[in-house]
Image (cartoon, rainbow, N blue to C red; front, side):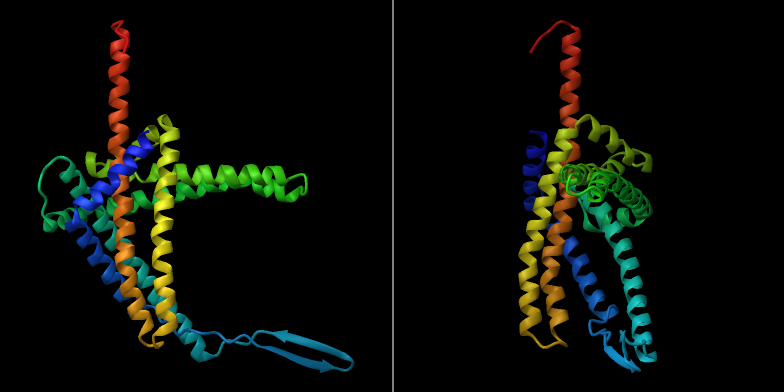
Length: 296
Protein backbone atom coordinates (compact mmCIF):
# COMPACT_ATOMS: atom_id res chain seq x y z
CA UNK A 1 0.00 0.00 0.00
CA UNK A 2 2.88 2.39 0.72
CA UNK A 3 4.05 2.35 -2.90
CA UNK A 4 0.58 3.01 -4.31
CA UNK A 5 -0.17 5.77 -1.78
CA UNK A 6 3.15 7.50 -2.56
CA UNK A 7 2.60 7.18 -6.31
CA UNK A 8 -0.88 8.68 -6.02
CA UNK A 9 0.46 11.50 -3.84
CA UNK A 10 3.08 12.24 -6.51
CA UNK A 11 0.35 13.16 -9.01
CA UNK A 12 -1.28 15.55 -6.54
CA UNK A 13 2.08 17.20 -5.76
CA UNK A 14 2.81 17.71 -9.46
CA UNK A 15 -0.65 19.14 -10.19
CA UNK A 16 -0.58 21.48 -7.18
CA UNK A 17 2.84 23.00 -7.86
CA UNK A 18 2.70 24.58 -11.30
CA UNK A 19 5.28 27.22 -10.32
CA UNK A 20 7.80 24.49 -9.55
CA UNK A 21 7.05 22.87 -12.90
CA UNK A 22 7.74 26.19 -14.64
CA UNK A 23 11.12 26.29 -12.92
CA UNK A 24 11.97 22.81 -14.22
CA UNK A 25 10.63 23.78 -17.67
CA UNK A 26 12.96 26.78 -17.73
CA UNK A 27 15.85 24.42 -17.03
CA UNK A 28 14.90 21.99 -19.81
CA UNK A 29 14.40 24.82 -22.33
CA UNK A 30 17.88 26.16 -21.52
CA UNK A 31 19.34 22.66 -21.91
CA UNK A 32 17.44 22.18 -25.18
CA UNK A 33 18.96 25.34 -26.61
CA UNK A 34 22.43 24.37 -25.40
CA UNK A 35 22.16 20.85 -26.83
CA UNK A 36 21.41 22.16 -30.31
CA UNK A 37 24.09 24.85 -30.08
CA UNK A 38 26.88 22.74 -28.55
CA UNK A 39 26.28 19.32 -30.13
CA UNK A 40 26.34 19.33 -33.95
CA UNK A 41 23.65 17.13 -35.48
CA UNK A 42 25.28 16.89 -38.92
CA UNK A 43 28.29 14.81 -37.83
CA UNK A 44 28.71 11.95 -40.28
CA UNK A 45 31.33 9.29 -40.82
CA UNK A 46 31.48 7.55 -44.17
CA UNK A 47 31.96 3.79 -44.06
CA UNK A 48 33.28 2.26 -47.29
CA UNK A 49 34.31 -1.15 -48.55
CA UNK A 50 37.13 -1.52 -51.07
CA UNK A 51 38.54 -4.58 -52.81
CA UNK A 52 42.14 -5.12 -53.89
CA UNK A 53 43.16 -8.10 -56.08
CA UNK A 54 46.57 -9.63 -55.34
CA UNK A 55 47.15 -12.39 -57.89
CA UNK A 56 44.25 -14.81 -57.55
CA UNK A 57 43.32 -13.49 -54.09
CA UNK A 58 40.85 -10.65 -53.52
CA UNK A 59 41.49 -8.72 -50.32
CA UNK A 60 38.59 -6.68 -49.01
CA UNK A 61 39.26 -3.63 -46.85
CA UNK A 62 36.46 -2.23 -44.74
CA UNK A 63 36.11 1.31 -43.46
CA UNK A 64 37.96 4.41 -44.44
CA UNK A 65 40.62 6.48 -42.73
CA UNK A 66 39.36 9.53 -40.84
CA UNK A 67 40.25 12.65 -42.74
CA UNK A 68 41.57 15.76 -41.06
CA UNK A 69 38.20 17.51 -41.45
CA UNK A 70 36.35 14.55 -39.96
CA UNK A 71 38.79 14.44 -37.05
CA UNK A 72 38.18 18.15 -36.40
CA UNK A 73 34.42 17.52 -36.50
CA UNK A 74 34.79 14.62 -34.08
CA UNK A 75 36.83 16.72 -31.66
CA UNK A 76 34.26 19.54 -31.85
CA UNK A 77 31.45 17.03 -31.26
CA UNK A 78 33.15 15.53 -28.19
CA UNK A 79 34.07 18.96 -26.85
CA UNK A 80 30.49 20.20 -27.23
CA UNK A 81 29.11 17.02 -25.67
CA UNK A 82 31.45 17.33 -22.67
CA UNK A 83 30.52 20.99 -22.08
CA UNK A 84 26.82 20.14 -22.41
CA UNK A 85 27.07 17.25 -19.92
CA UNK A 86 28.89 19.39 -17.35
CA UNK A 87 26.30 22.18 -17.62
CA UNK A 88 23.45 19.65 -17.46
CA UNK A 89 24.82 17.97 -14.33
CA UNK A 90 25.41 21.25 -12.50
CA UNK A 91 22.14 22.91 -13.53
CA UNK A 92 20.01 19.83 -12.83
CA UNK A 93 21.67 19.44 -9.41
CA UNK A 94 20.82 23.04 -8.54
CA UNK A 95 17.22 22.72 -9.69
CA UNK A 96 16.74 19.26 -8.15
CA UNK A 97 17.62 20.51 -4.68
CA UNK A 98 15.46 23.62 -5.12
CA UNK A 99 12.46 21.60 -6.33
CA UNK A 100 12.86 19.07 -3.51
CA UNK A 101 13.00 21.85 -0.94
CA UNK A 102 9.98 23.53 -2.54
CA UNK A 103 7.93 20.31 -2.32
CA UNK A 104 8.80 19.94 1.37
CA UNK A 105 7.71 23.55 1.90
CA UNK A 106 4.42 22.85 0.12
CA UNK A 107 3.78 19.69 2.18
CA UNK A 108 4.39 21.70 5.36
CA UNK A 109 1.68 24.17 4.22
CA UNK A 110 4.22 26.97 3.84
CA UNK A 111 4.84 29.33 0.93
CA UNK A 112 8.02 29.35 -1.12
CA UNK A 113 9.91 31.79 -3.31
CA UNK A 114 11.47 30.48 -6.53
CA UNK A 115 14.41 32.82 -6.00
CA UNK A 116 15.08 31.41 -2.53
CA UNK A 117 14.77 27.85 -3.82
CA UNK A 118 17.33 28.54 -6.55
CA UNK A 119 19.66 30.16 -4.01
CA UNK A 120 19.37 27.05 -1.81
CA UNK A 121 20.01 24.86 -4.83
CA UNK A 122 23.11 26.82 -5.77
CA UNK A 123 24.39 26.49 -2.21
CA UNK A 124 23.81 22.73 -1.97
CA UNK A 125 24.41 21.49 -5.53
CA UNK A 126 27.88 20.04 -4.70
CA UNK A 127 26.23 17.75 -2.15
CA UNK A 128 23.55 16.73 -4.65
CA UNK A 129 26.25 16.01 -7.21
CA UNK A 130 28.25 13.80 -4.83
CA UNK A 131 25.16 11.89 -3.69
CA UNK A 132 23.92 11.25 -7.23
CA UNK A 133 27.35 10.02 -8.36
CA UNK A 134 27.65 7.61 -5.42
CA UNK A 135 24.12 6.28 -5.90
CA UNK A 136 24.76 5.82 -9.64
CA UNK A 137 27.84 3.72 -8.85
CA UNK A 138 25.89 1.69 -6.30
CA UNK A 139 23.15 1.09 -8.86
CA UNK A 140 25.74 -0.18 -11.36
CA UNK A 141 27.10 -2.60 -8.74
CA UNK A 142 23.61 -3.91 -7.97
CA UNK A 143 22.87 -4.35 -11.68
CA UNK A 144 26.19 -6.13 -12.20
CA UNK A 145 25.44 -8.60 -9.42
CA UNK A 146 21.92 -9.19 -10.76
CA UNK A 147 23.32 -9.90 -14.24
CA UNK A 148 25.59 -12.74 -13.02
CA UNK A 149 22.90 -15.49 -13.43
CA UNK A 150 22.32 -14.38 -17.04
CA UNK A 151 26.04 -14.51 -17.84
CA UNK A 152 26.40 -17.97 -16.25
CA UNK A 153 23.26 -19.18 -18.00
CA UNK A 154 24.53 -17.98 -21.39
CA UNK A 155 27.66 -20.13 -20.91
CA UNK A 156 25.64 -23.30 -20.35
CA UNK A 157 22.86 -23.10 -22.95
CA UNK A 158 20.38 -24.67 -23.47
CA UNK A 159 20.28 -25.87 -19.85
CA UNK A 160 21.25 -22.37 -18.73
CA UNK A 161 18.02 -20.88 -20.11
CA UNK A 162 16.48 -21.24 -16.66
CA UNK A 163 19.29 -19.18 -15.15
CA UNK A 164 18.82 -16.52 -17.82
CA UNK A 165 15.10 -16.31 -17.00
CA UNK A 166 15.90 -16.04 -13.28
CA UNK A 167 18.47 -13.36 -14.08
CA UNK A 168 15.98 -11.31 -16.10
CA UNK A 169 13.45 -11.38 -13.24
CA UNK A 170 16.18 -10.56 -10.71
CA UNK A 171 17.45 -7.69 -12.88
CA UNK A 172 13.96 -6.19 -13.09
CA UNK A 173 13.51 -6.42 -9.31
CA UNK A 174 16.96 -4.89 -8.66
CA UNK A 175 16.29 -2.03 -11.10
CA UNK A 176 12.95 -1.31 -9.43
CA UNK A 177 14.49 -1.48 -5.95
CA UNK A 178 17.44 0.78 -6.78
CA UNK A 179 15.16 3.30 -8.50
CA UNK A 180 12.90 3.47 -5.45
CA UNK A 181 15.93 3.57 -3.13
CA UNK A 182 17.80 6.33 -4.99
CA UNK A 183 14.66 8.46 -5.30
CA UNK A 184 14.81 9.07 -1.52
CA UNK A 185 18.46 10.17 -1.38
CA UNK A 186 18.07 13.88 -2.19
CA UNK A 187 14.84 14.23 -0.15
CA UNK A 188 16.72 12.90 2.88
CA UNK A 189 19.58 15.33 2.20
CA UNK A 190 17.19 18.28 1.79
CA UNK A 191 15.19 17.30 4.87
CA UNK A 192 18.10 16.71 7.29
CA UNK A 193 20.80 18.92 5.75
CA UNK A 194 23.74 16.51 5.75
CA UNK A 195 25.20 14.34 2.98
CA UNK A 196 25.38 11.40 5.38
CA UNK A 197 21.61 11.55 5.84
CA UNK A 198 21.15 10.64 2.17
CA UNK A 199 22.43 7.14 2.90
CA UNK A 200 19.74 6.55 5.50
CA UNK A 201 17.70 5.61 2.43
CA UNK A 202 19.34 2.16 2.62
CA UNK A 203 17.83 1.57 6.04
CA UNK A 204 14.40 2.74 4.90
CA UNK A 205 14.60 0.77 1.67
CA UNK A 206 15.74 -2.54 3.15
CA UNK A 207 13.22 -2.31 6.00
CA UNK A 208 10.49 -1.81 3.39
CA UNK A 209 11.74 -3.90 0.47
CA UNK A 210 8.35 -4.68 -1.10
CA UNK A 211 7.22 -1.06 -0.99
CA UNK A 212 10.54 0.12 -2.42
CA UNK A 213 10.39 -2.38 -5.30
CA UNK A 214 6.75 -1.53 -5.98
CA UNK A 215 7.31 2.21 -5.99
CA UNK A 216 10.43 1.91 -8.16
CA UNK A 217 8.47 -0.17 -10.68
CA UNK A 218 5.62 2.36 -10.78
CA UNK A 219 8.08 5.24 -11.14
CA UNK A 220 9.86 3.44 -13.97
CA UNK A 221 6.61 2.73 -15.82
CA UNK A 222 5.59 6.39 -15.50
CA UNK A 223 8.98 7.54 -16.85
CA UNK A 224 8.70 5.15 -19.83
CA UNK A 225 5.15 6.38 -20.47
CA UNK A 226 6.24 10.02 -20.63
CA UNK A 227 9.12 9.09 -22.96
CA UNK A 228 6.77 7.11 -25.24
CA UNK A 229 4.46 10.11 -25.59
CA UNK A 230 7.32 12.46 -26.49
CA UNK A 231 9.21 10.19 -28.92
CA UNK A 232 6.67 10.12 -31.81
CA UNK A 233 6.45 13.93 -31.80
CA UNK A 234 10.22 14.26 -32.14
CA UNK A 235 10.25 11.63 -34.90
CA UNK A 236 7.52 13.41 -36.89
CA UNK A 237 9.34 16.73 -36.56
CA UNK A 238 12.58 15.19 -37.83
CA UNK A 239 10.75 13.80 -40.87
CA UNK A 240 8.66 16.85 -41.80
CA UNK A 241 10.83 19.89 -41.12
CA UNK A 242 14.03 20.98 -42.92
CA UNK A 243 17.29 19.58 -41.51
CA UNK A 244 18.52 22.99 -40.34
CA UNK A 245 15.28 23.68 -38.42
CA UNK A 246 14.22 20.23 -37.15
CA UNK A 247 16.77 19.90 -34.29
CA UNK A 248 15.67 23.23 -32.75
CA UNK A 249 11.95 22.52 -33.00
CA UNK A 250 12.37 18.93 -31.81
CA UNK A 251 14.43 20.01 -28.78
CA UNK A 252 11.91 22.66 -27.73
CA UNK A 253 8.91 20.38 -28.27
CA UNK A 254 10.51 17.70 -26.10
CA UNK A 255 11.46 20.17 -23.35
CA UNK A 256 8.00 20.22 -21.65
CA UNK A 257 7.99 16.41 -21.52
CA UNK A 258 11.54 16.35 -20.17
CA UNK A 259 10.48 18.86 -17.52
CA UNK A 260 7.48 16.70 -16.57
CA UNK A 261 9.75 13.65 -16.29
CA UNK A 262 12.26 15.43 -14.05
CA UNK A 263 9.50 16.95 -11.89
CA UNK A 264 7.62 13.66 -11.55
CA UNK A 265 10.74 11.74 -10.49
CA UNK A 266 11.78 14.37 -7.95
CA UNK A 267 8.26 14.75 -6.53
CA UNK A 268 7.97 10.96 -6.37
CA UNK A 269 11.10 10.73 -4.25
CA UNK A 270 9.71 13.18 -1.69
CA UNK A 271 6.29 11.49 -1.64
CA UNK A 272 7.82 8.04 -1.13
CA UNK A 273 10.18 9.24 1.60
CA UNK A 274 7.28 10.86 3.47
CA UNK A 275 5.16 7.72 3.05
CA UNK A 276 7.87 5.45 4.48
CA UNK A 277 8.34 7.90 7.35
CA UNK A 278 4.62 7.66 8.11
CA UNK A 279 4.67 3.86 7.91
CA UNK A 280 7.66 3.62 10.27
CA UNK A 281 6.01 5.96 12.77
CA UNK A 282 2.89 3.76 12.74
CA UNK A 283 5.06 0.67 13.31
CA UNK A 284 6.68 2.34 16.33
CA UNK A 285 3.28 3.23 17.77
CA UNK A 286 2.10 -0.37 17.28
CA UNK A 287 5.24 -1.71 19.00
CA UNK A 288 4.82 0.68 21.95
CA UNK A 289 1.18 -0.29 22.34
CA UNK A 290 2.13 -3.98 22.12
CA UNK A 291 4.68 -3.48 24.93
CA UNK A 292 1.88 -2.00 27.04
CA UNK A 293 -0.27 -5.04 26.29
CA UNK A 294 -2.69 -3.15 24.11
CA UNK A 295 -3.71 -4.90 20.89
CA UNK A 296 -5.15 -3.05 17.92
